[in-house]
Amino acid sequence: MVGAQLGSQAITSSLKAAAIGLVLVIIFMIIIYAIPGVAASIALLLYTALVIATLYLFEITLTLPGIAGIILGIGMAVDANVIIFARIREEIASGKTVLTSMKIGFQKAMSAILDGNITTLLAAVVLMALGSGTVKGFAYTLMIGIILSMFTALVITRWILFAMYGLGIKNEKFYGRAKERKTINFLGKKAVFFAISGVVIAAGFIGMGVYKATTGSALNYGLDFVGGTSTTVDVGKEYTIDDIEQDIIPLVAGVAGDSNIQANRVEGTTQITIKTRTLDKTERDKLNTVLSENLGVDSESITYQSISSTVSGEMRTDAIVAVLISSVCMLIYIWFRFKDIRFGASAIIALLHDVLVVLAVYALLRISVGNTFIACMLTIIGYSINDTIVIFDRIRENMAKMPGKLTKAELVRISNESLTQTLARSINTSFTTFIMVFMLFLLGVSSIRDFALPLMAGLICGAYSSVCIATELWYVMKVHFGKNKITE
Image 1 (cartoon, rainbow, N blue to C red):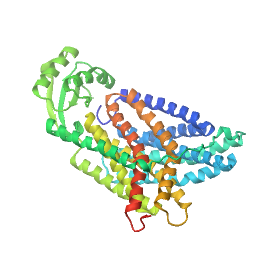
Image 2 (tube, rainbow, N blue to C red):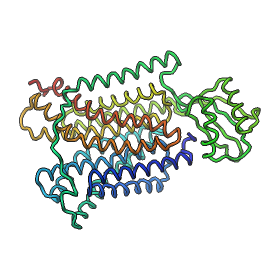
Image 3 (cartoon, rainbow, N blue to C red):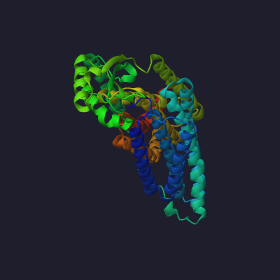
Image 4 (spheres, rainbow, N blue to C red):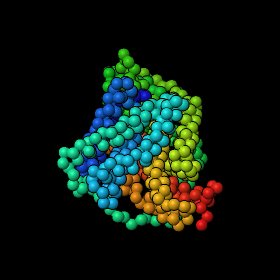
């Protein structure tokens, strides 16, 4: 990593990964959704252009948390389109004309899109107001992404789709027809789902306990959290950031045994400052030898000093407080919109589940916990809550069709039907977002990969918890808790 900003190589590789990922997402959308996929692809390109233009106009520095916010925005933009297209296909399957299906499809998709985006937007506003450092930067890019994604999905995609229909593309084969799918008994497997989650989370805590006992640190805290050693070396000539990343950082990483390294040029000199975890005398001597043999520097001119953490206790406290208040705001909003606090409570518990699973990934794989750790967690929370809201919206809609008090059997049937009806949408949205992050992991520099790996795990976990945990928790609460719990 190069300071607070990404080096040019990191930026170049990230942009290349984003471009390839975007192309793959567009190809996928067109293959799966045909004409609507073409409309969504054009809207997605416009969304990307608007995000880049906004970043440029407001001179927002591109950081890893910023990249996370953009990726989440792209995921939500794709998700909004997928929700709309699924609704259109359902209306066509019910016997309506393509034009009527498009009108009704946009209307029925509106509540899920608005609730999902507004819930995430509430979190972004709180993070922006109460967070600091990378948290605030993440919140800015997330807010931009949410607003632009809603605009492109609800306005641009709609305009393009109706324009294509007006140009004569009216045959329903170009728009698709929802297939009858056998209802999957998700709730019947809830004990298995809860057990799997419990085992993974327990493994994470056990791993942290073992590492705490053997190494003194439950997690692999990076420089941003615990400080380390700053090494200043005069390399005798000017190095570019790309040269440092390619030629020097790998040498230092080999000695430190850790890829969490920050390096900067000292302006106006030929000196380079390298920040690593704390190095003991043996490691310093070895680094002197490696730098001397490979770069021809005078080992006597190399100096070392201890550095403190850049993520202060206050910053960590700000982040935790902001997340807690965001969760309360999301809980209240979901309670208000769904008229049942159990929807909000199960959604928040599912978010906690995702955080603990990703924490287990950090612990067991010993991924460096630095500045991007907070951004990664926030991305997972934003992604997962949006996915869960879409499923809850379908449950609310299906329950409204059932007059009178529901029985347990009817509640199980409605829950399973709602999960099955939204399953293709959950898979497609998760896949397209995963593509973007996977390309970052595949093509990015080491700091990008250390960020993308837990993010991929979080995306998978977020999709899993929305389908296999959140609704099942809601059912348990609906049956066992509350004044109007279902007992029959």
